[in-house]
Length: 95
Ligand SMILES: [Zn+2]
Image 1 (cartoon, rainbow, N blue to C red):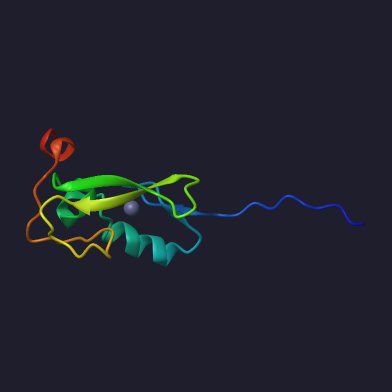
Image 2 (image 1 turned 45 degrees about the horizontal axis):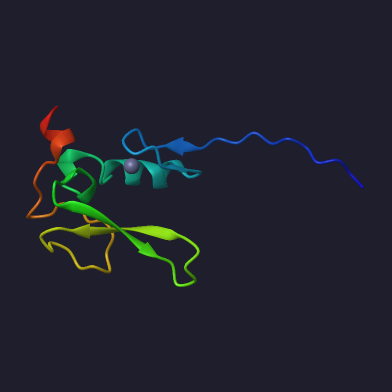
């Protein structure tokens, strides 16, 4: 049986939310519209963003589900950007 070999690879990280990916163009597109950037008026920087913990169907664990306190987005969508009803959260207002 042949021994396994170590492999080094390059990944690209969003400077705003720390998401990583293997494709530079994909990650640059993500970083340009990242929901963690206040200028993009996304849920991650909005004071109306809230989280609920929902019990999994097999009751083995809870999972986090994002909600909008003022119903500005469809519940089937987890995060949006460029929201008309966006309002800065505490972290954004402090900067
Ligand atoms: Zn990001």
